[in-house]
Image 1 (cartoon, rainbow, N blue to C red):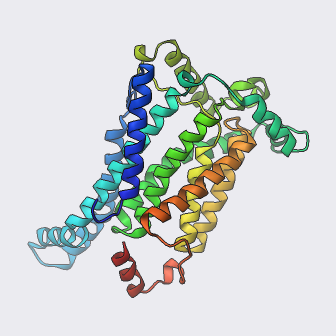
Image 2 (image 1 turned 180 degrees about the vertical axis):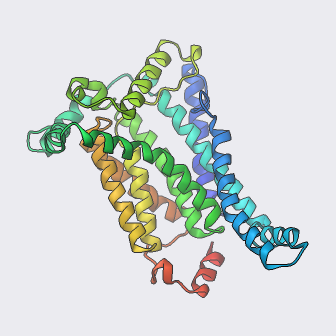
Length: 350
């Protein structure tokens, strides 16, 4: 950590770990692996990163083995490992993964403790604010009237579920394919700040979300995979509230602000800073828009949760840029046209 790649992310992880221990000890609550019922996070994340490493190294190994005579295979493998996976690169990947893992686990546990710390819910006030912003109309009701309650429910459910896979994929790209770059450190640190800021806002404004506080409004939507997830989260909440030590489930219901929106906005802003190819940036913002739309349409969040999520995602990036020393300005040249000299300068700056 002396090199500073993830100093900020480790600081966030340490602070959240201490907060988790303090709340758990104060309220006599267990600390759980948030995904321990299925595949534990400490297993799943390294496997994702390992897959990214294989996708990075194996094609180069195969190409190198074909280009050299026997025993070229082993020579090519040593060359790939020497060039691509130096000690600094391995440390960069492992330390970034550790920082992200600790902050994520702390976030999920702190989120789960919320109803034991404060049982006050702000859903009524958030719903009123939504109607004020939408000139007396309910945002979800308007979306149901405009888009209908058929195909749109299936499409937006797919968008919402797709997000679950994109976050660990983006993490793997940042830790493996950016080659110990300032950009990779910026992104991982920004996501860690999202976890910290998000859980802080959860405690300031505890809420369930429209689908749980006003389920009748979403009764006309078809049964999709999204419905199963919502039912599962509600049953987990009930089980945890009945006895936190008697179940392996983790309570994960909280609405304000939307971390789906926050992390998506952070990702899009990072892509803008790096000036990734225009089609990639456009696709990112389109997905961000669909995420905002789906989270309100499906009842996960109020409209004000979307606004709050966008603010959290923006602030997280600003804080990450500050602690990593990454400039908050766009690259002078698009990523696809960057010269080798530019990339070398970035690697040295990281």
